[in-house]
Length: 214
Image 1: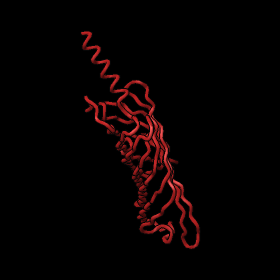
Image 2: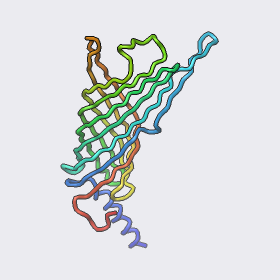
Image 3: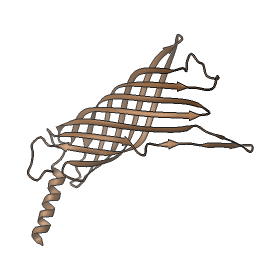
Image 4: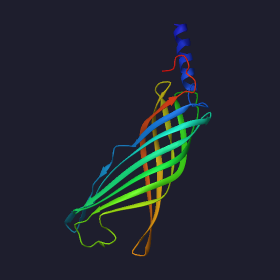
């Protein structure tokens, strides 16, 4: 019995200390929680009208290298899509981003590793319009439009190490995209903010294989 308890303690200690050291790699994939869809109904003076229906999802694959214990620097690739529908009108915003990032993991001595991170980079947003109403300016809102600009992000959460190599992530993130373009000699600046809850996984690759790593 004592040997079994000792073996368990050694395994737990190895699990909590075998990860996130200088020279290791981490590959992650996170997605917006729930692939959200929202609809609403507005009632006033005995009449009702359907509000806009909004659906969105996001996915963020990334790779990082631990330059020191706990700190990984790397690249995040992000894709976010939001579609709004109302009364036959439809707008879809699709944003692709590339950001150099840094993420720091706090070693608690257990299986849970809180983390914080940030990044800044480039984003390209494609907007697709489909309007059945004539109230919109057909010169400003017609067909597709593509804008490029600055993007930055901040994130925080916790990684639960299910094995010595595989972690499960739960966190929150804020992304901001800034674009500027000119339509009919009018400068148009657009800022889009995204805040959400993310779930995903991280796979840690050690610089040197250790016995018992799986």
